[in-house]
Image (cartoon, rainbow, N blue to C red; front, side, top):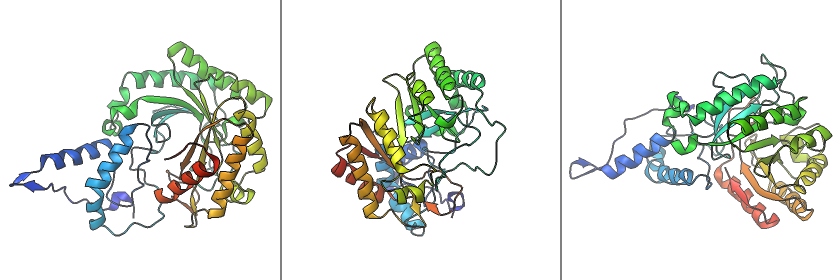
Length: 360
């Protein structure tokens, strides 16, 4: 059942001596003011310390509200499709732009502005959980760098002036989550396949130089990181910028099942090692439930072993992000893994590879 179809009985606050318990009332209102949440089939908000507000709000929700909702509704399935009615990972908000969008990102810890580096939806992966429908094409097949730069400058100005608060949905979001965390080079396809990758990175860096500092983050599947032109583009990034590289499995069999790439896993691992020896990288690993099943334990061990080998080979891995699908996707066979399973995967990474791992 979609969250919008669930019954919404009026909130009834406990009373003390015939008067409403103000402490309970305040707690409930604070939770609902922070996040637009439904009453059941919820994707638990990400547990991490960036910012602390997230963990505090989750604890409030579980303590004060979740028990009541569980009594009112049928039991939620173990695996369920993600809901958009959360502060984090809603559908992208294009804000009237062609190439620049906004999203409240759990992994960013707040507001992320994205640059659609590949509006033509060109990708050498066909991930089972991907939200991009490649059966259709938008109005733009290639990134127009000058247009993107103008949009980015305009959007950054709007964010810094607090103009997002004039839009209805953002009025419900805490100010902490509307602080710009980074500008992401990402979008509808693999960014490193964009023919004007270097020009786009240069343009984003130029906007930063003229309008005030922000962190740049490249989100990539890693397959193109050894190309000479991509390496030239990466030289533009500063030490404060980040490269997030996808690694969704440790065996060719699992990667073929989840990502359906046209390159071997060995190529991805080699490129992670190439870049990781030059600068710290972040590994982003999305684990979906496929046909209602969680990844086999042996596959998780293989994944952790690959990370251990990368670390031993000299890759500087500052963080491993463990998360599941958070937005409705095109393929029907995938689902969202529960927090319990994601936490177990993160624990395996910490124990086997000795790396910092966070669950989102």
